[in-house]
Image 1 (tube, rainbow, N blue to C red):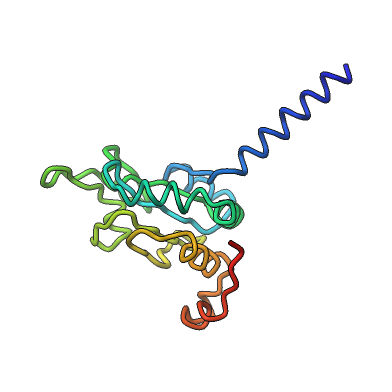
Image 2 (image 1 turned 90 degrees about the horizontal axis):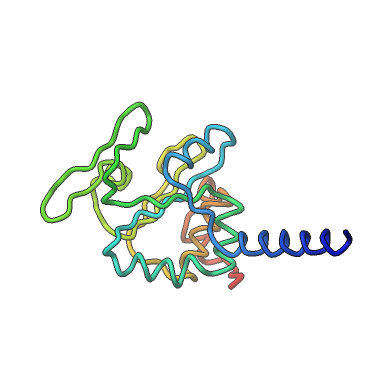
Length: 172
């Protein structure tokens, strides 16, 4: 019996450890549902399947343990495909895929990015689902760490970015 309990504890410890080694990505719908139940800011990674810099950001930035912890502790993290085919309802409006050119785009990420389609784009939303900032382009782990710290600690409310950036101490 004691061996079984020890084995179960070991399996549980390994499971918890592995869960903390990656970002808890959610769908947009899951993130909004959790936001309503327990308000917390949102971090949205807008990507496409064909985007090389999106994949590079997954491998080099989103795999860093400091960044994983900061995101999981402070945000609901959402992966949102810029070319998503299914409808998504948000704030009483149903956003749809729009065929355009060779690929097309989804209206929701386009709206969150003010029509400036760029992949990857990182979007920060408040606890009331209002857009704080949309940051287009690849972000390496050093830059991303600062940005996540700025928005997770709500420094954006009373500290200008330049001042925050100048005084930031990295944990990497």
